[in-house]
Length: 427
Length: 211
Image (cartoon, rainbow over all chains, first blue to last red):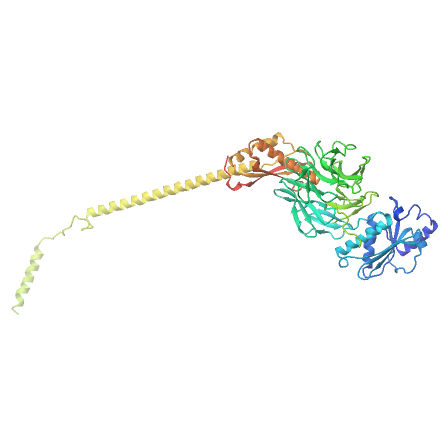
C-alpha cells in the first residue's frame, strides 16, 4: 500500500539489474496519447530545490501514487540535476517518464515532464499555487498540478484535487483525497447522507430533528443554507442531477418515493417513483442525467432498480446471482456511465460490489469485515466506502482495477462518504 | 375633774351592757352579685364553669372532629390523587408501550395490534393530546433504507390508530432508522429490541384525563 521508495544504494542495484535486460522496462508502455489502461508506467521524480521542495515533491508523488496509474520512483535525497538528463540511465531504472520540479519565484511550481523513451521533453509548464504555503488552499492547488501531470502521462486527469464529504459524530466533515485536512463543514450541525453539487461549491444533506428529517442545500462559499424538502416525515438521500439544476431525494410519510425538485424553483416537486408504500431511496444519476439508480423494497427485499428520470421504464438491475436472503442498496453510478457500485449482503455482512451495465456481470470487491456505502471518484476507477476492517468504521479508498486499498480517515467513526467532483483546476 | 366622771361611767355601762348581749349573726344578701359567697353564687359559678368546660370540650371535640375530617379529606384527596397518578402512570405506560417488528418488516403483528388497542382509551379521553410515533430499525440494513423502513413502521402504527377512529392530525410520525438503538449489540437479542415503534405525547401530556 505504501509508495515504493528507492535509496541511492537500492537504485544502484536496480540499475545493475535493469542493465541486464534493458528492453523490458519500456515494452508495451508509452506515455501520453498511447497510454493503455492496465499498465503503470514508472515515473521518476527528480530531487528539487527550494523552501517547500520536500512538501511539494512529497504531495505530488503521493498524489500520483494514489492515482494508481503510474509507479512512482523517487530517490530519497540528492541534488537537483542541472543540464541535459541522461535518459538512458532512467530507462535502465524502469522509468518511462521523469518529472523535474522547480520552485517559481512568487510561490508557484514549474513542472517539466520528460519522456524517457523518446528522450525529449513532453510537457513543461509553470503553475501558480493559491494561499499560504501548506494551507488547505495551497495543497488543493498543488493537487490540481498532480492531476494535470497525471493527464500528461496517462491521458486521464487524476483525482487528487477532490475531497470526500462524510458523516462523523452526527455532523458533516470533509477530508482531502489524500487523507489530509479532515475537518467539519462549518455551520452544518446535524447532517447525514451528504451529496455534492457538480460544481463542488454546494452540498445537500439530510438534517434530522425530533419531528422528522429535511433536505438542506448549503453554499459552501457563502455559508448560506436553505431547506428544499416540501413535506414533513422522512426526507433523505439527496442527489444532484449532472447538470446541477435538479435535486432528487427520497420523501414520504407512509413509505418513501423519489421526488425531483428544481433548484431554481418555478415548478412544484415532481414524483419520480411510485412505490405504493414501499421504501424507495438512495438515488444516483447516470452521467447523462437521463436515468436514476435507486434502492427499492417494492418486491419485498431491497434491490437496486433503474428508472428514467420521469419515472418511466423502471427496471430491476440486480436480478440474478444473489441468494434469496441477500439485500442490495446504496447504488452509485460511475461517472463514465458504465458501472453501478452498490452494497450487497453476503453471509449477513455487506460487501461492496459493482455491476457492469453492458453485460450485467457482477464483481465483488471486498471480503474482510463489513464494507458499505460506496461512492465513485471522478475517474470512475476509485471508490470510497465505509469499512470496519480496522476495528472501527472508517472510510477507505479502493482502486477497482488493481484491488489496492488505502485508509482515508482515522479517529472517530467516519461513514457515508461522498466523493466530490474535481474541485480545482491548475492555473 | 367632775366633768370627766359621767363620761367614764357611761363607757363602763356600755361595756357592761354589751358584754351581757347574745352574739349577733352577720346579715347576708341572697343576690350573688351582692354576696359572692352565697350558695346561689357558688352554684352559679359552678354552673358557669361546667358550661365553660362543656363549651371547651365541645369545641375541642368539634375541632378534633373537624381536624379529623379535614385530615380524612386530605388523606382521601391524597389517596385519590395517588390513585389518579397511579392510574395515569399506568395509562401513560400503556400508551408508551413499544411495539416490535420482524426483520425487514413493517407489518403489525397481532401482539402489536393488541398493544395499540391499549393506547386507544387514553387517546379517546384526551382529544387535545397530540402524539409522535418514532420508527426504528436494527443496525443491519443500509443507513438510508433503514430510515425509510423506520418511516414505514411508524406509518403502519399510525394507520392502525386512525382506522380505530383517532384523528390523523393528532399523530406525527418520524423515523430514526438505526441511529437510536434501544439496546446496543450485534446479536438477535439486541436487534429484536431495536426493530420497534416508540410512542410519545408531544402536546397535552400535562393535563391528561383518565379514560
